[in-house]
Amino acid sequence: MQEFTYVQDILDGIGFAINEEKNHEIIINYPLIFNKKNRKYSLSDDYQITSQPLGTFLTDFINADFEKYDDFFDFFSKYSLSIIKCGEIKKLFNHSLFDDESIQSIFTVIASKNKTQLLNLQEQIDMILDYCLVHPNKLAQNFKPIERMYALRRIDASFTILTSNKATFYSFPAFSSNPGKSEEEIYNFLSQKKSKVTELNLILPNNLPVLLYRSLIAVLTEQVYLRICKNCGKYFISSSKLADYCNNLAPNSKKTCKQIGKFSTFRDNMQNDPALALYYKIYNRKLAMKLRYPDIKKYSSDFDFFKTIGKAKLEKYKKRGISSETFIKWLKKNS
Ligand SMILES: [Zn+2]
Image 1 (tube, helix red, strand yellow):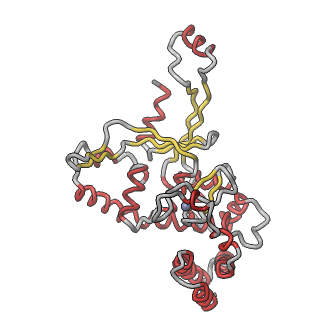
Image 2 (image 1 turned 180 degrees about the vertical axis):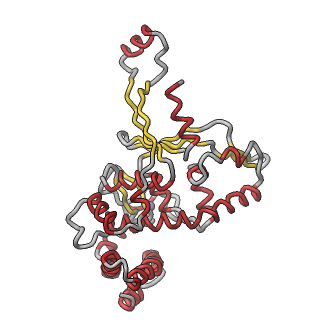
Image 3 (image 1 turned 90 degrees about the horizontal axis):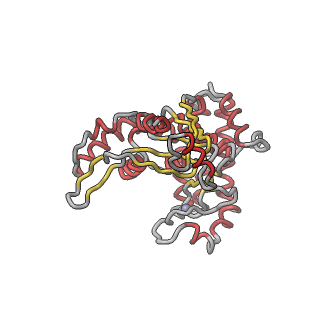
């Protein structure tokens, strides 16, 4: 049937479509199945369709540590390796059964080939979100996140994500169930109150950068809200602008961050923290210098150093690995 052409096109592409009107993202893939009896992996012959709130892919992507095998495996098992290797997945798995070791070697090879690109994209998103959403500088503060993004795109051409724009557009009528074929059957179907037909508009990103770009736009236009969980520190998507805690299981706990957060005073402590304030002040100043004088290498390397080492220190500090005094001392030394 014609309306299923898009399914085939999604499967031939990166396994992903976006419905911006409904704030949904749709994943269509051949899932990897693990058979507990013989402990072998294989690729399912049937495709599977899942839908989730728009922006979830983006948060999964930035939360993943692609240096770690487990993160890489979990991420690309949930989505599809098609995201980085268009249409090659069926060929790659070719009805075979794989044991733990061979599946690991396949994923390890793919991980190492794509790591540089994935880390570069993460880095870009990190900086774009910092500039546009999380810590806008003084000049940008009074503008909307999407306006800051337009400014950033013009002042710094190195953000390749911001110029990624190749997608396929699908528009077709979707019925809530099979309406039949004859004129009579179709009108009969439409006369039943519960039967609906809507025009469905889908965007099929042609590659990973486009998918990330569309997700960023949804976040920066505040169609959905990207928040940082005040308990686990990870990004999450919410329909509320004020959500503070994610719904994932908290680290080393059987409760979700949301359940824990209710009883926590952690958030209040974070908001009035002088060490954090100092960190973001220095961060913003170094970024501003880098953007203002792109030809001066010192500013650029200075910022890159602060971003890499500073972020690691920040994480450590948030997890109480170093004291506030030590953190502030390091910040002042590197300001
Ligand atoms: Zn959390």
